[in-house]
Image (cartoon, rainbow, N blue to C red; front, top):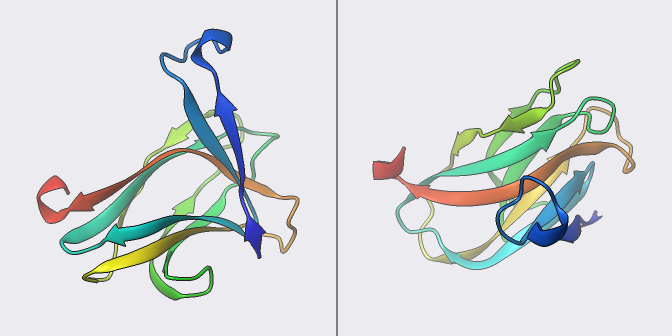
Length: 132
């Protein structure tokens, strides 16, 4: 299992983008992580995932504790439409955990092929119970 690819997006050079950002391209079997996140009180994880017919295939995004193959806290299915390009924003309830941990975002495609693009990640947000 390897790391997902990250790309900077410059607002000046990209129509429709108001501020600079970094996007992550999620390929099957790849992951990225958030280091030392205090999960005390976190009840869910919300993300914005871009899907584009002919480019991404959809699949599952998994949220794992402390390692790419660590305890599964929760997962979200990302359905690829046949003709619709756009963003999905699933809210995934996670198991209750307290203290600081690394959170791994792992991409799982329908086919066991590292070349399969599951989705593009725009952002991830950690939510407490009041935000759900």
